[in-house]
Image (tube, rainbow, N blue to C red):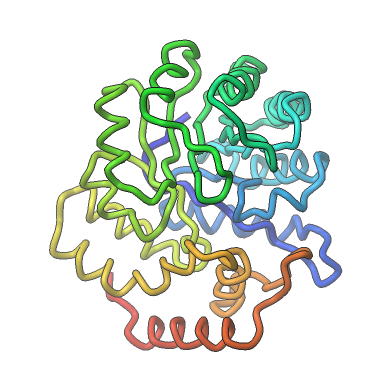
Length: 297
């Protein structure tokens, strides 16, 4: 499992009847890898995991694995209401061909470190697959602190990475200080990527990559190489789009952007609804400006 580079948190392609469009999903996965991405992360927040059934998540893994073959690893987000369901999903993902797991805290319930440590530990122990801990306190109300992450790394050899989405890029530095090079640190918020790379992150679990993969890969490459002039210019162009990834309707916004560039549909499962009103007006303005002034790579 390679946690370095751009790993798209892919959207889940849906038909008008809201069933999964597996043919479109396969095409999308291949587009991501053809554009220079290092792997595929499916069944995450952007993939509408909370509205997918157990069997649908496993089927998505199978589709993604078949689509990319040996070209890149496929990772499944493991999030459930209960530890038992999360463990079962991890094992099913392994059988379906996943190369890694993105481990989330449980939905709805968030508690103290003792319980969260037991939950994450159970998932990591359930398979031989390498795991990436997903820290997103704004969304999941659970904050894995650098010292706690180091504790998990010391007890679970297959914990290999952390997706850091607290919004505080100082956490990248703090995790590095706590674990050294033991874990790969990836940025999970699109509008913190350049700062995160400069702080020591080696990967990006990206969102707007679903509509703009070439620009996403180029931005990560510029920042990683230390080409600050090109990174700053591309980041300046990209930021209004990247900020669509960090608002409550990020799924609707990114799927809409995909559809507008001819690479998907805007369909989402309720309680989400397609964009309308002020949200749609703002998205149109942002995308129109981005396309008009599109950066030359």
